[in-house]
Length: 355
Length: 256
Image 1: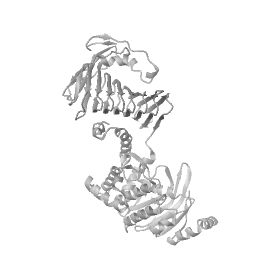
Image 2: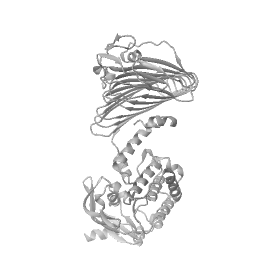
Image 3: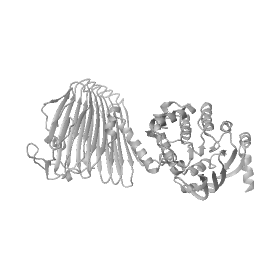
Image 4: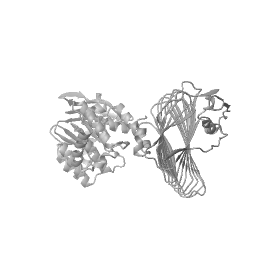
């Protein structure tokens, strides 16, 4: 695949299909050549569009850093680094959320948005991030957002992702957590043709905690493949993950969640849950929670459920005068609410109106 | 106001109601008693329109604006809007929907249908507070999710709270007394008695006389194997309390 107009022209060879990608054969759909999508203007703090990162007014305590970045030899990790890149350091807790916008204006599959955003949060600092990945009818998006939380740092990250019906999207969210760092990450996604979300968190210091929740709403022939990995390498770390899918039409959702607990990571508590609500007969969900535990004193739970709206709950609402269509809407909203509640109250408004 | 004629109904192919006849007038309280599995809950669910029950024969007519309408023709939400209320034996938990949103939504739907003005949030809160007081319920109930994590008693109080708000003309209370301790039972009965007027009617489905001491019925019916085998006044319930159902069942089976 040829990259033209991304700084230097280059040719990358897409990798062969592997087991971890067996449900999302994005490589088979890649165009022969990629060009940056049209640049868009936005007043968010950080704007990525096409291959350009624009830094507007940053909240106080946040600054751009210039740290050399290693380029991965792995195709999907390397691809975002050919686009816009920014590294931020949070040295004081800002008084407002950091607003990141990945704005895509693509009308052809060849038009790509590539970029990488790294944020380092100094010990004991607090950061709220509102990240918006706005719609484009088509095009390829390959981005990564990496967070590095110092000890006792706290990050609340809300992400809204909106893809058009023909869009291809590979996005990575990764977090490193030092001792007692605390992360909440809440995703609301409306999927396109094929979206691959790779979400991971490493609990490296004692007492680190990550709470991840996601809801994807799919219609038509959309497909979202969420691949997550929670790695506990330190003792007394905790993690919670709730992955929900709301599936209509002929859409398909895949959840592969791995919880890895190293041998020395004792007294870890990890919870992982995948819930799918099917709104149509042709929608399809695959849930694959996986545990890899090498420590012996841990508390772990995981599961995957798939179902339809309960008849009893519907009848209960009907019996109070609420019409069938409205009952369905309320019960669907209720399904979503649990995910939204993972975010602190001040950031829920950002997510609330997205679905 | 309610006329049930020769009603038969089945669930998953087995016939539960085998010809029910029941007439209820405005201002009356009817108690339906009977051994387990006699069809008591089915009768109230069929009247409210639960989709799992299939009506195979008979009719249910209900007065709307002094005209008898065929209740079985109406969708369950329309029945509710016309003033039919089912107090559930097992109220459903709906995590993710707050009680206050649920109550307001139901209240406004019913008001809109009956041509009454909707209330704004503040007006609705005032109304709800008044009803909460009637049932000795804490205001915190409003912000909790519908029935989620409620105790048995709290769920039943929540049913009566809904009844108090929706002000139905016909309330079917399906074993509202089960799972209540004596204090909660008193509060629930007080709530029901406060809502009761000469314009509405109540059908109580119950196993126990203790509820009927507090909500005194005008008529008592005994349901057995999908038929009403005996009707009487409140003294019938007292007699059942003393003698059980066996004598009635023997009498009924002797007739067949």
